[in-house]
Amino acid sequence: MSRGKVEGAKAGGGCLCGAVRYEIAGPLAPPSACHCVQCRRHQGALGIYTLAPEERYTIKGKRNLAWYESSHGIRRGFCRNCGSKLFWQRSGSDQLDVTLGSMDEPTGLKIEKHIYLADAGDYYDPPSR
Image (cartoon, rainbow, N blue to C red; front, side):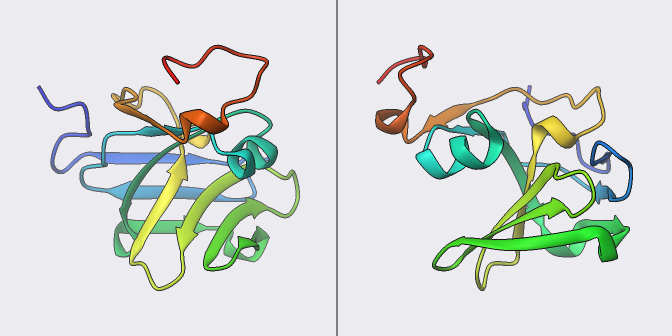
């Protein structure tokens, strides 16, 4: 059984205040948990993301979506009203990562891998370093 969304499924979600909502058509990649310092600082904890081609996203409330270039070639999307962290994207990529915390449940997804474990904070025990 695949841990990603089944073909033809539609996922959705949005920010805390509802000013930005999105739908994603089709399957999603298995989620990754990122323990890097930037994700932890941006999210307030580790970042957990799945992704799909940007063309499969429908985003409502784009005027409320702000982007921050957190490092060269990396941008992070968030709601300019409530600050909810929503997206992550590498410059020039047609893939858009979405935070699992912003998705409506049930997601049908399970974390399949952890990345940047060496950068994990000292306040929690990641699966392995």
